[in-house]
Image (cartoon, rainbow, N blue to C red; front, top):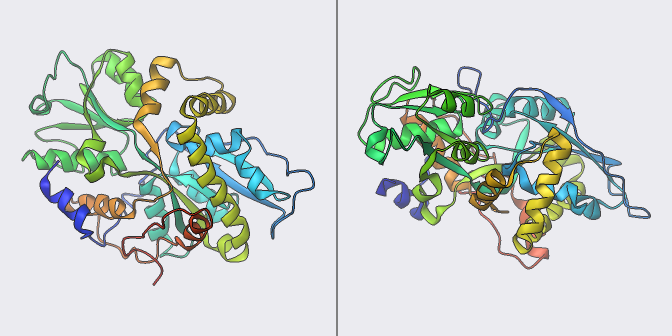
Length: 371
């Protein structure tokens, strides 16, 4: 980790840059296709007080980096806070489809990665969404074939996969390559390291066939590769000050936030209490998340994938706004994007209201709050 990154984070000198539309394909911490599937709808609490909306529609991925949503729904923690307002859920396999659903009113609140959050915000010129909370940090690793790569210097000349051109992990790898003094053309991926953009669902097969030598990927893809004999060469958390960087945000439709602030606060209260429950009950929470994954995808994760993946992801209420700004700065330096105005992408007032009511510390927007 270059010293400059740590210094920027500690001093709060975050570039006002962001991840705009990149060839029309900037995706979530992409986990698959654009296909959307319906989740379970929780029944309103009997005799519970209904808030200003009859229901609230939330969206998330059937993925461990969205464990707050998985566990909160599975354990009924969101519905408990919503009382007589019904919780309705939908799941997505990639960020663009979730953003489309938010824009269309098919969902009101979503758990999603930093790249699609920024992409959705900039495409609408700041009119469609706000980031209102954090959800998860970490869970990204550089895993390699130990027979071909034994040290970080050995990565030079090898083929390393990332999920998608311009996505969060792709930018991180390009920034790390630059920190080593190596050169790579960001668009083609050609250079001192061959950056191979590969869907996470395909990456394990690509590794098994030998067409890639390693991958800079989120969990559980990283642990799936390890189960095939790969070795963790670098945990991206080690490159960040305090070992924290945003991997999942909570976003809301601005229209819904304005019309139903009480409902948004209830969902945020459920999110905060779910994160607290996960921290206090890690084994139960891990099992709950895996049960939810089995329900949603038809298949639970095996222990040799679930355990290390779960351990590397940290739930957080703080959106870690400074790291989002710095990630954007890295993408600008890589030549992948321009510098759009991100002022106003965060509205943390509802979250801070909830945190204050629970006696928790407030969180900051790193200067990207309301104008």
